[in-house]
Image (tube, rainbow, N blue to C red; front, top):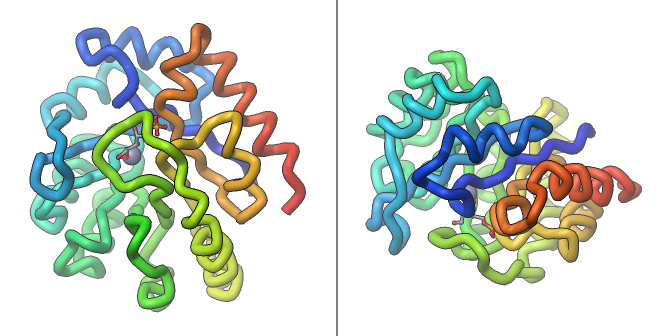
Length: 220
Ligand code: DX5
Ligand code: ZN
């Protein structure tokens, strides 16, 4: 499993997004948190910003849709050129159809679970998913404290993925830092979102290298 780091621009300067993307040339992805003030109590950005950012950077965009109606909106993010589009289990009403649409439009299909949502009921969907996102905070805000109680679910998800046999990436998002990333890696995560730990650092590029080194040093 290769370690991938996806810095979240939620912690970047929204007035200078192109410059902020350029500060992390060693990122595997740019994590873009789309919030609609309904699924989560916060409002961030939407399609026009994703379309503009797509043209402003060559780093692929990892769009995390924290919105109430992902079935309606997710395909448009794939059409806008996102490399990966993640929908939430708690919000999607037709996840199979939507995940298939995302793939058919050329993006990777991601499926996210909030801290209180069990992974086992979704084992049958693994064939439709390119990346499973296990939230390690309640979604909505950057800079929250990492929830250790989610780690057993990360382990369970890794086991389900191994049993399934296909290549499904396992992402963690929320409170991932130099303090917590090794625990996530040990539990089986291989894609790490980090907002504050990257954009809160003086040198975001160096912060990514540091996180990558820590995660890569963990034996799994
Ligand atoms: C939270 C978002 C995260 C957030 C992570 O709802 O999905 O992507 O930006 O920020 P940190 O790493 O600061 O917890
Ligand atoms: Zn996110």
